[in-house]
Length: 151
Figure 1 (cartoon, rainbow, N blue to C red):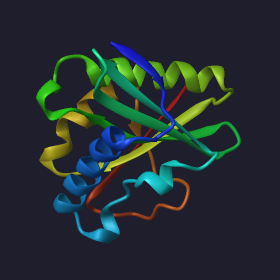
Figure 2 (cartoon, rainbow, N blue to C red):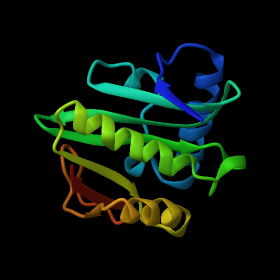
Figure 3 (spheres, rainbow, N blue to C red):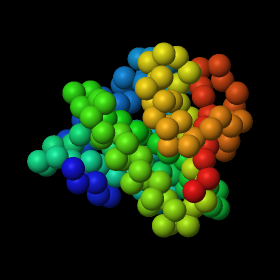
Figure 4 (cartoon, helix red, strand yellow):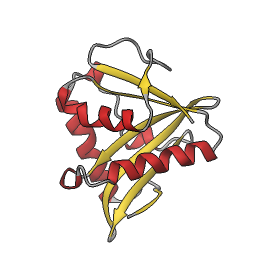
């Protein structure tokens, strides 16, 4: 598997991210859906990576710098045919390593509170993320779980 910074150009990544945003919007009401679309990811504060095997996208993730030393994990997705195959772990490890190299000392995230998101919450716990209060512009939301970890 190759993980590299992606310029978010081309139909393959657009379709992959559209599937991500559509799925999340189907699971949660608009006020509780915080997924970034392509325009939201195409800002200087965001570094976006794709994982590819044989040229095919198998996963993605991003880190958005939200304050000095603080990043937010965004757009974490594994191709549904590749869940539980190590793609998410490889991407998360890569994002955390790159965040540390970029001078961040903390990475936080928001994810869903319902059972659909349990595998994600389990993965984040495995990587040392712990519950925290809402950060950045987030507010308390019974449909959201907020997690953070130091690097």
